[in-house]
Length: 80
Image (cartoon, rainbow, N blue to C red; front, side, top):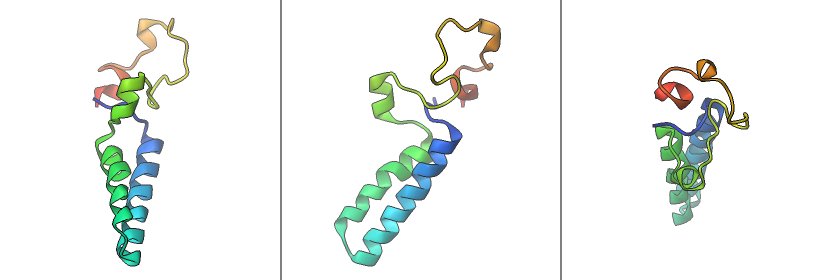
C-alpha cells in the first residue's frame, strides 16, 4: 500500500540521503535520523499519514464525492 505521491517520495529520499551524508561527514549520530525519510520514501508508505488518514498521492484534496469511474484501478496511487 502506498500513501505518498511520486514527488514527495523523491524529496524524502534526497533529504534522507543528505542527512545521512551530513551525519557521516560531521561524525554526528543525529545523521541517523536520515534513515526515516529515506526508508519512507523508498517504501512509499508513512505511518503518520496512516494514523492521520492523510495521503499525498492521487486524489489528495479532491472532494470525496468523485465518481467511481474517475478512480484509477487498484486503489489510490494505482494500488502500488
